[in-house]
View 1 (cartoon, rainbow, N blue to C red):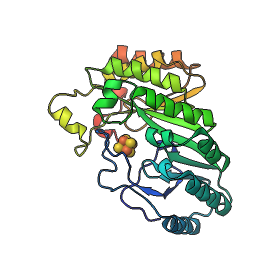
View 2: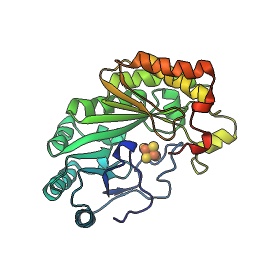
View 3: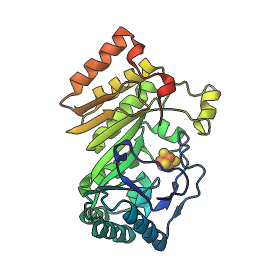
View 4: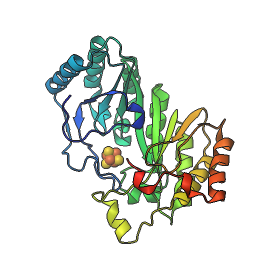
Length: 291
Ligand code: SF4
């Protein structure tokens, strides 16, 4: 397969065939994100997409999972996405599941009927970067939406019957707003009540605009134990049903996974033991963390 620039996909799509139907991210303004800064956003033409599918089919005819990239591929017109989905299921005889990144603005532009139509044509899961539930933090990091707009986007996906996986970023409020970040993020995640909730821990890349805030002392990064305390507060305030919560990405200091609310007490117990023992030796070393 050939791709334009580096390709990013959710951790749970590690085994999927990645098809790049858009290049970059239309929003491309989040200060913590550097992944698409070198790409000018564009939607690939239907002819380009057809060529990509033909190449992919020749190389990976047995693909069971496909992920549609780049950053907010859900921005593609619904009628075009339907054609792509139909073509994929016609061509890949073992295809079981198709996933896609969807920004809150893309979701806002689609009706529930359009999302349902995508589901009927084989789209299974949408990945939404919630990042924070704090209005202050969302504004500071230029996410481009309010908590209310984020909730509306998430609820719309849930109402469509598609699976929804939300991501939040531990440490995004720094030391000053750690508790606010945890509590407000729990409120937004609870209002959405997604099927999956993933916590990544902030890693500041030199090329990300947020680096300037760190250098100026405006954003003080959390220590590993402070990050765990933030996760604990988040979990304590979450009110979700049958939500698979994962903090086991390579960016996290301590791999955590639980179904909430059923395993919430167990999760808090694990975090408490590490915090109280102050044993940072069992945490992932700073140099081994990765995005
Ligand atoms: S975090 Fe997502 S929406 Fe924000 S710039 Fe990066 S890819 Fe785009």
